[in-house]
Image 1 (tube, rainbow, N blue to C red):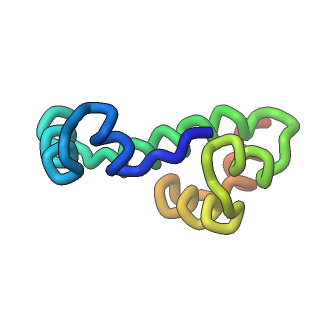
Image 2: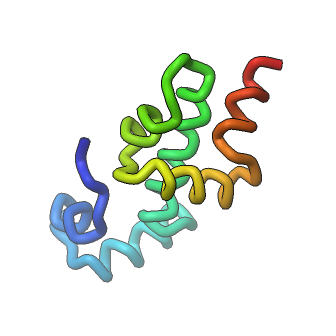
Length: 90
């Protein structure tokens, strides 16, 4: 997978990192990294209905650490990935 980092994203747009961040936030009303995290969590929510493990889902969503994934997932959704996985079965 491609690592989503500000310098790399800015370079692809031929902008400096700071200019890229300002333009992105002005255009989308969210920082580029917040957008990346939100997209990862949305993808994880979809994948949680599969038979994959949390570790596999975390890796597929771009997380090097499943512990970091679980912490960030709970911070954003208010539930753990396990709770969300079981919600999908109801």
